[in-house]
Amino acid sequence: MGIYLVFIIGAVIVSRSQGHAVDYLKFPDDLLLGAASSSYQVEGAWNEDGKGENIWDRMTHANPEKIDDRSTGDIACDAYHKTKEDIALMKDLGLQFYRFSISWSRILPTGFPNKINQAGIDYYNDLINQLLANNIIPMVTVYHWDLPQPLQDLGGFANPEIINWLKDYAKVVFDHFGDRVKTWITINEPKQICEFGYGTGMFAPGLQAGGIGNYLCTHNLLKAHAHIYHMYDKIYRRNQKGHIGITAECSWSEPATNATQDIEAAERRRQFDFGMYMNPIFHKNGDYPAVVKQFVAKRSKEEGFPRSRLPEFTQQEINFIKGTSDFFGLNHYTTVLVKDKKADPIGDPSQDKDTRVETFQDPNWLTGSFSYFRSVPWGLRKALNYIKHNYGNPEILITENGFPDAESFNDQGRIRYYKDNLKAVLDAIYTDHVRITVYTAWSLMDNFEWSSGYTVRFGLYHVDFNDTNRPRTPKESVKFYKNLIKTRRLNTEDPKLP
Image (cartoon, rainbow, N blue to C red):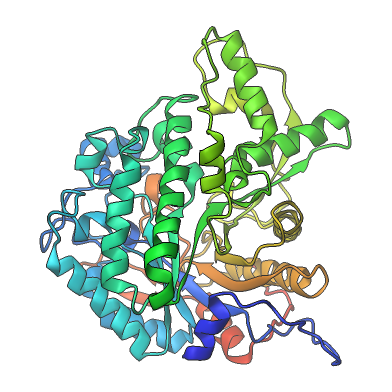
């Protein structure tokens, strides 16, 4: 157990080929293989044992039309009642670690630490202890989108007080679980929280305040993350001996042509897509990317705003945020082709209008049940190299990578996706010398996929959501991933697609 923890918390990687012939299809010993989930997507028990209401509870109940199949996460996979069963699946699969998130509302029903729900603490203690008893490392996300509704009623991430609210919540989490959890992710996917939650309104809390609300959210979120990092560093790291970082979803933006304007557009989309969130933390100069500041400021002026809609960091804040991650958490699913676009007519602001690009995909790229999630392994490799060269060669934890079903059980498309993307990971490690120490399959089982409800399935295990017992059934990809973990070698022979 101890040696895995040493690997995962980021010692400098020794050359993987010192004086030996290299098997380029074999996984290095220090690359951990696991799977992931998140609290709202799998737990269910939405109002049991003292849990409070969160923003997804509210949105799915009050605005069911925002979910493709009008479903909720009220029961989801019923993981709250199936800890022993699910860990047995993980053990049989051979997972080295399991990434999951903690429900803020389950341990702090009102969002504030003056009322701690002991039943929630007990649930996560039991989950962590059972994982460790089965030699599975817990990798824990502090915040994965399910803000307590009472805090949203006060403005949520648009209120600067979210910095204190998140910090107070994180302190409770570290106090209760940090003695056993050694890898922490503060926040999962800032873009999805802010752009989709406070910009387009596609995700909870469903606010449509594009070009303003999403930037306020981003500004406060980054400062909240930095405060959590510094608190852990100052108070907990010495005794708990863990590592802590942040995860962003980074699709790859490829220029659609060799024209200068399209090359610039692709880079601009990268900066709006993930640079806005990771540049302040990982870039040597900190702060938002220059092109983001420039384009938002220019359009804000044209729209008649007295100042840029993107808030400015003070130099003190830039210094405070810079360097606040022990690793780069990467969620990657697909690639888009990018062309420059003429500016939209002046009207209501939005991040899309600020970015000023057109995106599309090659219809020949492998796709499953959701056309956007196409398999483009060279895009993953380019993203990994981009992170290496632009963010100081950080240790990279691939915290999500996955593909939606086209078939319920014979998921050969998913197997091919994993094979092709894992080959890209190995190429990045051996040929490009990218420092990758974790690979995480999304997801362990089918779950509530946010605005898609149960219409999109990413799981290795099939879940029957029409059965009150929510039975789990292994798909063909379970056999593939189980053998991969056991042999620690990739068989690149393509499966026969159905």
